[in-house]
Length: 198
Image (tube, rainbow, N blue to C red; front, side, top):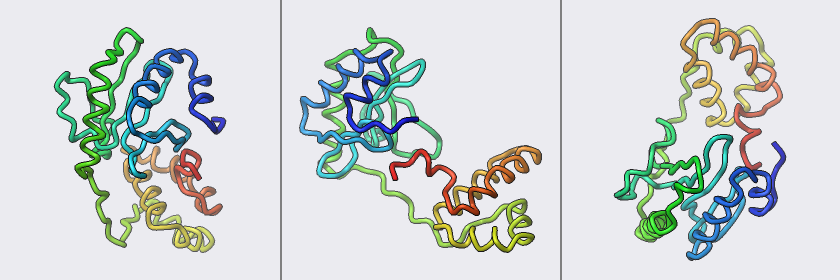
């Protein structure tokens, strides 16, 4: 995906929800949040701390609250993004008719207040050890270049690769994933580097 350099460009690239995104942006900009682009999406921060983001996909658009777990959610509009994202909550909509401006603005203002109060989930400090799945371990032992390349990666990137292999349920899937990541490890790149704002 082409890297966007402005929120206007992001909205233009997602014109199927363009009007809705413009409304969300107006609501957010009516507050004190600072607008930036991170991870190829509009992100809004308070004193350098990420508060929320908005985005559009094929079948929905919405707002992501980085510490949405602390929102009261009186209208029951939020859902947990993924199991591993403890604090992140999103508000998905499939049409502009679902965008209730006063309600959305109330959620945004509550998120800002929570940030001012310091309500945020701190990332868990993970230990230095990385549990290497047996499939990857066997490949590392057979290939010195692969082993050296893996050791050169940051512990975070090592864990990403290990989890990627470990979360596959079938042996065939583990093998397919292993074959996919070996060249990436040798190049010294992380599993999800292409999605990160480098």
